[in-house]
Length: 342
Image (cartoon, rainbow, N blue to C red; front, side, top):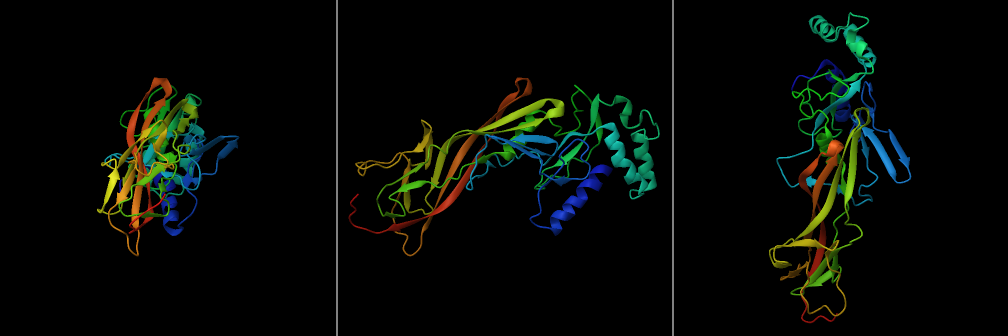
């Protein structure tokens, strides 16, 4: 594991141990500038339809996110891309950093040589200018934050704390230092989209060689978004997910999909078309036809919606992020029958 800064080692390691020992404990996050040791992310403000949660130095506004028990997180269609597992953001004022570091040095837990080097780095012996106290109100000490799920690479932000003057960009050497684009990627990770259980006709049980119509409730499939911001820097970004298609996988090779690709494009805000009386002789725009009965078992039909992601941010920044997928499996009973009346 990469060596972490003295502050990161002291603050992050206990949190990881806690996760290992207490499965199901509350998610951990730093909630405020100078938050010190990590604490449960419970800083939420609810006002009508607005919900903002502070986590890891970033405020997330999820008021336009998907909601309900069937919602879930997106999986990037680009397997080589993932949201930042850790990032750098403002964390301490000069006084707060001093109050964080000095007890560590006094405990002599990191060794005399390390402590002496760190005291020199932060000019700790200068009562007026140590820890950049002469710059109070003109910037912040930045340090690392970690994704609460500790994904691979969570410990890669091992540099810091470092000082950034107000209005200046963080040094280029600090990868994942918050910018509008990094905020957009973090917002991507917070997006939740509706479940993908499709409505089928015939419902519950379908028949061999009978086209089965499939569609999704148009009311559920509308754009959702999450906004991430760092108020002290006055920067923000909004990541928006829009549904574009539904892919149907019948769960058996003995089936035909409509269209043949199995991918149903969104049309006029709707995916697929509801079955109606009189359409029995028509080919569904989205659906499946099973060629063999499921017997005493069922076929696991999987429906996956692809969502396109774009973002906009402070200063006119913006662009696209990898598409995201969210799917679910549902059991389909297919029976052999000679004649069917609808």
